[in-house]
Image (tube, rainbow, N blue to C red; front, side):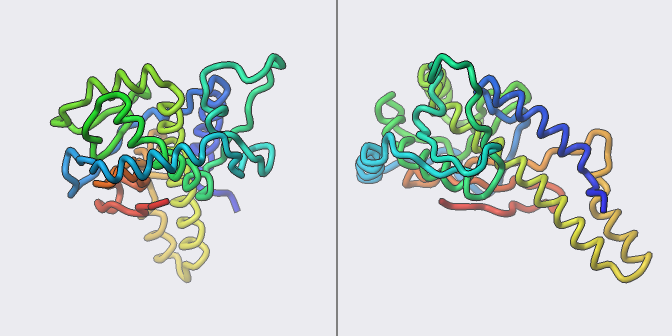
Length: 242
């Protein structure tokens, strides 16, 4: 059976691979969320604990799902802006699997509080989004937006890791909704039910379908979670904590 929305998924895949080739895997859409404070302060205890975890985990190989199969990657090296060899071979492309999203989220959680502290940023934004140019966006009243943007520019490794987990989340949201369509379509028992399913997922067939937006959320302990922003159902769905 032809997967509705497959053409769009193929286009996303092509763009995603092109971005990966330059190690700039930022997604080019914005996201929004609700019911969160715009600024989350991170306690000193949480900073110290997570900084210690980051130190202990640095350099470790993490098994990731890639276009070359399961590969143990040193995430610090993978996201480094410096060339990792003279062969010119592109690094493995991370696939939009939940395991990859969870692994990156956990790795970021081990680094982010210490990163903020090292750059003199006392509070994290409650969420991180990306605009159409792949630039990070924060809540309008987040007071440290310029400092955080500069810190991410000065430390591109963690910036690339954040944008990558965001991009993987959005791509996975698209695949999940396409799969949900297939399941509901296959389960339909009449033409009327088929019509309802097609109408429900009509955006999958649009020439310019809306993005199924991913979002990065940060809690009071400095822990990042990925999820799906308010979309077709009008609610926040599939929030994940590593």
